[in-house]
Length: 190
Length: 256
Image 1 (cartoon, chains in turn cyan, yellow):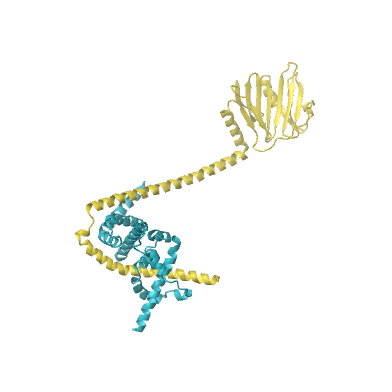
Image 2: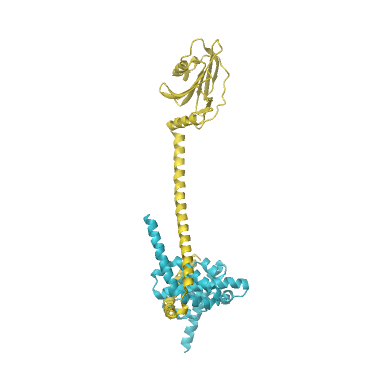
């Protein structure tokens, strides 16, 4: 009986939390989703899908500080919007996101392992470089390392084979390192 | 090669950890800008959800919570059912082992069988064993010539041995008198079965033969006594009174 009562209270608390979150972030999520889909007819549904997806992350969201929570909500909204257009565009044979071509054209560099890693002291510089990554690669890194999605979930969102996610992630990281190297070269030239 | 693989794996883990750190830093920085953008939008009444939108989301939220609740309840039920199934299996195994190994329980099971099979009664002393293929020739030797065996020491006057069957697991002596009335004495070893017609029997009762539990059945003027003793099963069937049959049964002794 006590367990049922506790469960009921937890449900009420979760529902109140989610309704607050919905009303607080509605405007921002609406804007971000529409900027990707340009589809006013589906935006409302996609907003609801975003918050229903966030339901499974209530305990994490409660602990995140407001700026990180905002990023979490926005990137979850982006994943829902990207998933929508990916599946819509598969039908239309027209890719908005162009993940396959954008990521595939980055040459695979066969450097020794040690040369490929980012050293801890490069962290601050790398942070600046990540902002300059193409949206698709930044989203991919966000989904994997911030939202901590499984590869299968990412593959479903992006409409790619689950086995390819690992390769796309490798390419996104290499691209970030390449940008870092270019930044450094520019810095030396100046 | 193995070392190289270990190094590669460690670098991959290191890079994954570092990118997590980088993305958390980035989320914090971007989050500040996004937060400012959110506050600005929240001040714009047009960017707020309509009452109908909130209502619709609330309905969807309720449906999702109920679905999660139902799912959790189903999982709890499945867990309970799994535990019950394991407990039931354990009970069956324990009961099965007990029935197979404890003599007293066998007698109980035997008695239970007597109750649920009114048209006939099947007696079985043990679960295992085999039929002997050593069937000796019929003999007219009197049972008293047997040694190291059970023999009926009391037979009413006028009866003579008509037939003797002496198997390793099955012994039988048929007595007959001048009126053509018979007395059957049987001894069954492990693995033997005996079926007695008990349908609409006149008498069907539990008795004691020299302290051993047995069953007395009277039907159509035939008295049957079945009892177990010294890990063997004995049957006396006679066209006599129950008292006489009881006396024959009580007279069965082991002779050296």
